[in-house]
Amino acid sequence: MPKFDRHIFVCGNIRPAGNPRGCCDPTGGAELQKLFKRKLAERGLKGRVRANQSGCLDQCEHGPNVVVYPEAVWYGGVTLADVDEIVETHIIGGRPVTRLMLKDECLNTKDCEHRDPTSKRLAQNS
Ligand code: FES
Ligand SMILES: [Zn+2]
Image 1 (cartoon, helix red, strand yellow):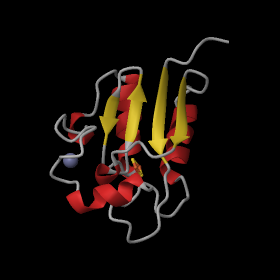
Image 2 (cartoon, rainbow, N blue to C red):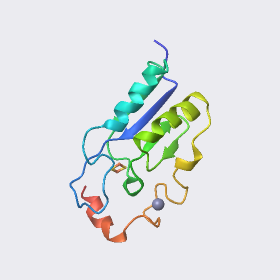
Image 3 (tube, rainbow, N blue to C red):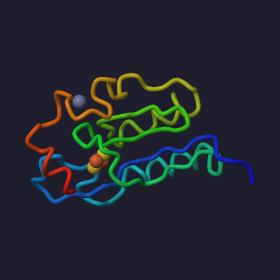
Image 4 (tube, rainbow, N blue to C red):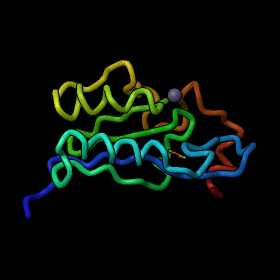
């Protein structure tokens, strides 16, 4: 069987309501990951591109978060309405959807403007 061309990791982490960091899948329904999976299958990409539900990707304040490997393109604030565009434009067309990409100054830093400094202590325990 050939290797996968790409993996799409879709954060499915759930935290209790009121957690200062929020979470990417408050309802726990994994709807975003399921829709990616369905669209990939519809476009004949099953076995070449896989949409995996992931645990917390530690970019919670920007969620729902999705990352596409191997190119390591990070998307934030992804909704069900964005799935088609990501699949068509990025996965099939090879052009990342820039309007949804996390800014470099937000990615993997505890100091971005969206992160509440008072949540750091709580986040360490999550
Ligand atoms: S809960 Fe999704 S990145 Fe942390
Ligand atoms: Zn940010």
